[in-house]
Amino acid sequence: MLCVVRTHRLRIDRHLQALVGERHPETSPDALRKAAHYLSTQFAKSGWRTSDQLVRAWGKTYRNVTAVRYPDKPSHGGELPPLLIGAHYDTVSGSPGADDNASGLVVLLEVASRLCVQPLARPIWLVAFCLEEQDRLGSQAFTSRLKAERRELAGAIILECVGFTKGEAGTQQIPPGVPIALPSQGDFLAIVGNESSRFLVVQLEQAAKREAATLKPLSLVVPSR
Image 1: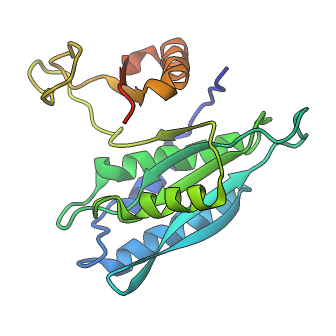
Image 2: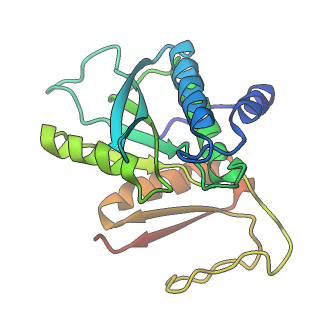
């Protein structure tokens, strides 16, 4: 069962003020570095073990910021595979990146803050990815290392554009090829996963309906690639 915890509005606002603003590797590299430093610092303040994965691109070095926490007591039969929760911290050029994706980062920081006092059944990895807007170079580097180390995950929850809502009819544009009917109002939480993640999708939807029904969770399982 997924653990549901409460958030703190003032802390959320403080994180948003620190993170909102263009964070692009070419047009605002200093802001991108400051965002990475802020995320690492906040993870550490919440008691998580932090590290960086260096990502080389265009002759420069960027970083994925990782925070890890392990169960206090080892599970019977050995350590379980970790659950990854992630969000990207770069933006496209010219965008303040508030919804895409400071909103996801704030959720990630809240998870770090609240889970630091919760007992864990398995390791949790929190990852802030760089260079998502540049062909997902940060997450590609991360998954390549997982494959090289033959590490398996229990699952991955990626937080993307969770901070904008609009309740008027016609405000939700439906991407082509979506196989289910979606509301015309952009006021719901979409939970999307592939076939191998079906169990995790169901758990997330059930937890959201039970604890935060006003989010109007709506799930979709798509074929695995």
